[in-house]
Amino acid sequence: MDIAALDRWAVQGESPWHRAAPLAKIGATALFIAAVVMSRNVAALVTLYLALAALMAVARLPLRRVLIIAAYPALFAVLFAVSRWDGTWQAPAVVILKAVGAAMAMVLLITTTPYPDLFAALSRVLPRLVSDALFMTYRSFFLLLEGMDHLITALRLRGGLQRRKPVRTVQNLALALGVLLIHALDLSQRLYDVLLVRGYRGRFPSGQRWRQFVARRDVLPLLAGLALLMTAWAWQGTTWPVRYPLAGPLLALGLLISAILWRREARPALAVIRPSASAELSPQSVWTRDDVRAGRQADAEVFGHEHPELAGEIVAHISCVKHTYSDATVVSLCGLGLAVAKGERAVVLGPNGSGKSTLLFHLLGLLRPDEGAVRLFGKDPAREWAQVSQRVGVVLQNVDEQILAPTVFDDVAFSPRNYGYPEGQVQTMVEQVMAWLGITHLRDKVPHYLSGGEKRKVAMAGALVLQPELLIMDEPFEGLDPRARSELIALLNRLHSERETTMIVTTHDINTVPLFADSVHIMVAGEGIVERDAPHRVFSRAALLARSNIEPPVLAQLFQSLRECGLDLGHPQTVVEATEMLTRWLQKPTAPAGVPGL
Image (cartoon, rainbow, N blue to C red; front, top):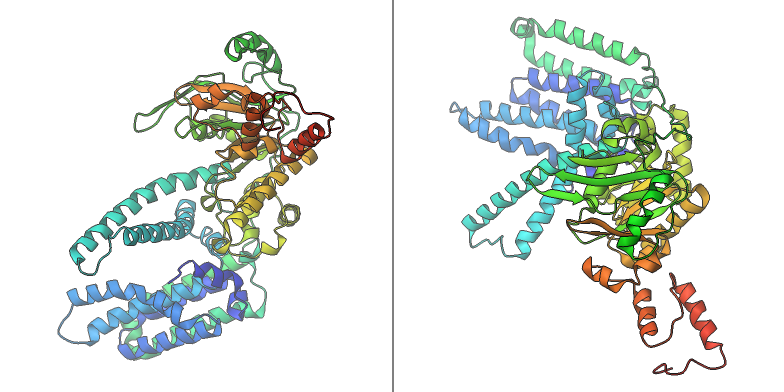
């Protein structure tokens, strides 16, 4: 059963029940559950069960698949019914039917209501912490399901699931569940990090649709809920008010609260904080060009040559950072330091464990250094992230964990809504960035079903929607096919040429670096950054690359081999440049003497 299909049904459904207001459907669900709880005999519960099934048919849901989902709680209800069995069949049947009926009511709600609309309404009733925790639990549930599927696949491929060895199979499944629990704890931290970098301000934003309660169809769910409640009431006979003396007042109070919520005026939007493009940089808190000049002599001793001077404002700076993780692992970034100027496209290269992710997490304020300094636009990101967050766009390595909403449009709109932009302006901003990236056709798609390249474009749209001055990307080329990789490189070059966006990128895809990078920073485990220079210079130093376990790009290797053979044609960065160099050499009257094979 594809549980992720719940999102698709909720988003893409077109029935009158789907189009009804979320508040009306929440109220109807409360009435459905009240009717189920009130019923005490099998006939009444079967009637309610059939009525809910009919409503699912009205909502044009795949009845068989939805009923299977609703039947899951029956497994636990059976265990409870067996433990409380009194020798008759009616008592356990009532317990099971109540569990299934309540589950059907909830499934009808979540399969016809996109979850941002659902949780936006619940957040006005439940404590904010509770509603947001439910929101993230719902989102992470699908990621954990995918992780469980991968674990079971690995067990099957490695012989861990065998019918002839049931005990061993159960042990292996228990082991997989334990691993999944560890993954869940780690996932919760990563999702919280995503919320911070995407501008979360204590409430998950959504559009205004959840507040709507104006059309006639919005009354239909409530009428259906009242009808089922009256049906359950009728089954109780004249003794119902005696058995449930508080039920009437509680029901009236619930309807009154619902009416107040429906008529409640929209809360004022959060104040929009738009950072100044000319924010002043404190000399004590940011590395300036004077600092670069002062350090050139020391750099020359390490490089063996003078390093080109950085031009313009220093956007990001990391100096001699040390960080200790919870498992006592110490990561030191006390090399040459990171300094990225405005408009520069900086790439950070290094083997696994060299500290690339640690470096990015410090820039994003997700980690605080034990020693050293970190500055982003002159601010300490760990303490002042709110002051720089709108100037920074982030694309994480695992884009599945970065996408939070049920549709592409809602996910791209996540940050603008968090920062309190008016909904009309949000619509314009989202439509512009989607058109710019060529993903307008994905507007109402459910992210679960997008390809890897499409998900990365959606994550990129979410990072670019606020037109940030700085774009930070962690392994953006991972998992992309050649065409998608070429499209991403073209996009980065377009961003740089049209918007002069500053970029900090980590990657293992060496061959892409010369196609877009202005500078390369080489990291070595335990030493931090040991070299920074233009791509063609870095990739011409074989000893340095070997020390860092980095292989130069194919073109660099080819033209280095030609130089060793006596033919120095230069340092082409792209296939086009290499073609031009070779063409010019071939057009010469004679080839240089002493070049083997030429």
